[in-house]
Amino acid sequence: MRLSIGIDSVSTDDVGASVDAFGDRYLRRVYTDAELTPTAGMSPERLRQYLAGRFAAKEAVFKALRCPSSVALPWRSIEIVADEQGRPGARLAGEVAAWASERGISDVDVSITHDRGTALGIASVRP
Image 1 (spheres, rainbow, N blue to C red):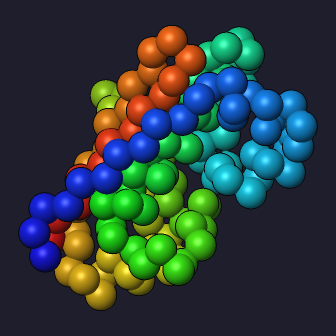
Image 2: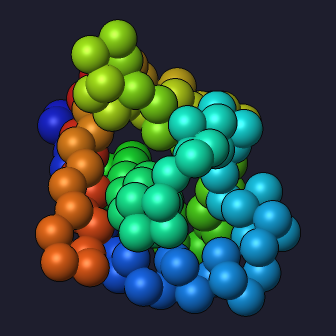
Image 3: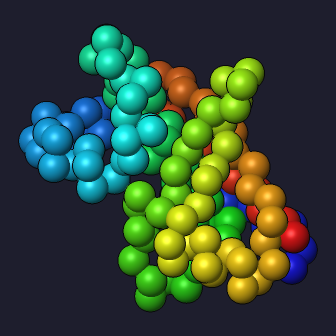
């Protein structure tokens, strides 16, 4: 497999609306405990940015992996984590990890940015 890139854009307001409407049910369906732990004490605006960024990054990883469109994205199987310097990365589990392993994918890079109510995630994968 050659280098593959995925990108996604998410409205911070849309993520905020999902949190407002569905609360913990939404959070636990989409994000892992490790992703939610750093959110304690965040302002509502920062929380929307943070969650939207991770949501966009998960979508970007899924796209970069070239998973078939017939497969529903198992949100919690892609965990967006930060390294020692705070840079985002992805940890794969379950179906997504199996898919990547079958294709010889050993490296997933992620970048996230926020600007004016939009979060953008980009991911690259390579063997």
